[in-house]
Length: 199
Image (cartoon, rainbow, N blue to C red; front, side):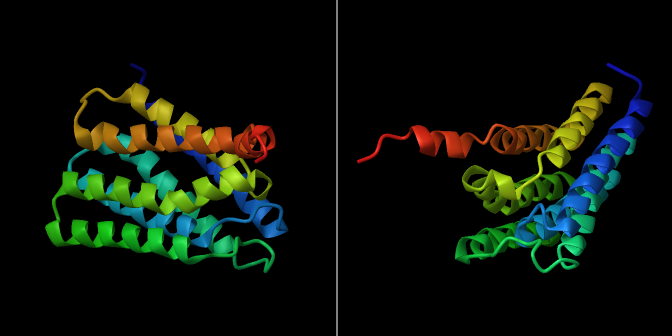
């Protein structure tokens, strides 16, 4: 276990990754899926307030950072007409499921339920970007996921009280970031398609 003040390092690492992704978005080099990035800002910010309600403390800064960065990236996607991924019906379907998760939390109002449905909503919102990272990794930038995963690791190392409210969002963020980083950095989807036997 490390001193919880290390969370500030994780916060700035995550912010650094978001700023890099944001710059690539403005240049048109990276094409974010707006459904994912909008909901990736809403769900963590809801979880952040739920964590505050449950007394999580400084560790909730990680959850705030993984909501604030995507909000900036979503807004940046409107600055360059070539910097967004064309949406299809599946993007909207997963976006709707994510929104339903947020509504269910709002109806219950309980902190741990809010965190659970925020994780679920965030995951559902991320499916379009996971698919995009698999089929078109060149449309993404892996740095935001790499630095966000460092943020999650640091946060997990500072936890003294292992309640659901403390560990749920950091564990989820670490897992999804590792998946996205791997798909983009190593272009797993393209390699798989290349090696797939032709019929």
